[in-house]
Length: 412
Image (cartoon, rainbow, N blue to C red; front, side, top):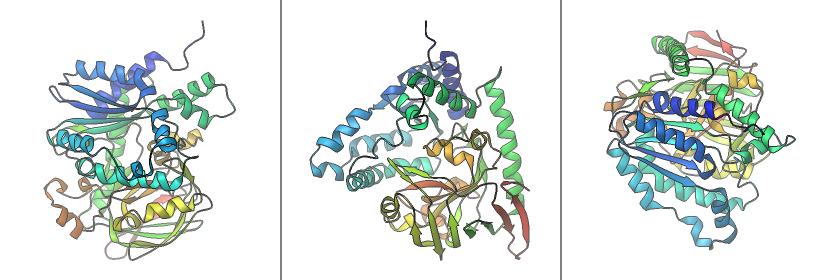
């Protein structure tokens, strides 16, 4: 009898970690769970662990690759300027009533690569606009939320095109399980130890209170001013509803909010960015006054430019994150074509919306106060990787003193 490429035992462990560590779901709390239909085996185990944890109601919302592709191949042109506003409003309302949020990723990241890029861009913009009220509650960390991954066969074939499907799926599954730290006798204890390490990093950075970070390396000479009253986070964080959760499974980063007006210089991407079906390679940009004024890419440049034109905040930064080159995902040598994993292989920056939790007393700040302290606002939040073993980072104090933070991609 052929062994299933995805270990049921490990899948169950991932579901338990997603509920207990990722969400820290509370008794009586409802959960909205979005996932590709192919991830139903994981969705079912998550529902089981959620109800064991005392969930009030688990509501799954499933997508399907064939349904998505049918739209691009058969829908009327006007369809691409619309989104399910009613669904997005309902999700925003649910989050306002303390419903937890979990997203399972797993579709082929390049699913839309052969479709009309203009239609893809229009559909993405419509979705971003409709989802913004819900996104603001997530970016504002009003509720406990998390993202995890399922090893879909289409995604596996994308990563390992030379392997038979079962072998490719098993290899992707093993990579997801390893990165998600579910190995060993007690995955929950693994996460407690990992979170403690990330807390030490954030405590050091918050104690230093740098005014800016300077990144230097091949093609990169970038100064990222940090927002006034910024605060570093990493690993487990406490949402405004009082629940401590891990928003990303896996995670290796510590991150904070840049000042939207104080980014200067040039930076080159160190890994490709997979965005909505397009692989954007060799991104190189120049910032002036916090805004990208020049941008190019060897592949996918047209899509990059559409992203930058999403709205006024799309050319400014909403996040800067530090990840050592020795992170397990980096050392795997794999390109996942998925930001959840690829961002945890290298230091990165994010275009667009900032996280309000990355401010001192962020839960008490209004949108206007966050903006006044340098926080950026946008309908997008897109991470791309700028770290490698050839990148140095200095912290710059308010008096101009420089302190080594990273040397050759590792904590100094």
